[in-house]
Length: 214
Image (cartoon, rainbow, N blue to C red; front, side, top):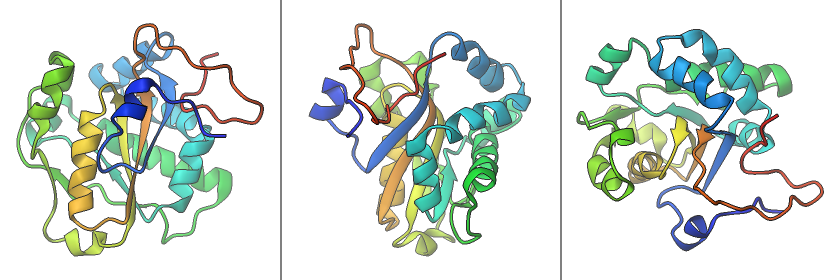
């Protein structure tokens, strides 16, 4: 049974992505934890948040079946401002969690944090209306030339923290696709919920796209 999709996802699937899996809803109680991790200079949250990601069956399957894990890169100016890459910390912790739970061959889910780069500094997506977010990121990602040939034919998983419109994941996925990746799957810690978003009742045995909050 496929997880339910909202009307926007059905009408306009994200280019470059074969699937997207999210572990949490970006709302109470997890929003405060995620904000503390991302904006509050509290990198120690990474293992606990990655544990929630590893518990989502779709995420676990995606990691176990991929060749490369690619954290969404920060521009060097944003990295200097924040002091660490939250997506890199999540990717490292998530890989450890999956390896511990299921076992993971060394050649699978190899962490490649420098194979995708931000080519320019952009305005924070959270400050922009939805219709401007895609324009803000056009051409903002590229596969590093040195490593691009090694992406050809690879099954890649993109790791991000919070997904709202999906424009960031889409632009990064298109860059990996242009480098020749066979598949690109997005894995995010949390996604924002649209007001009034209604899901059909869960079916027995179905795996939800977003794990229900406790």
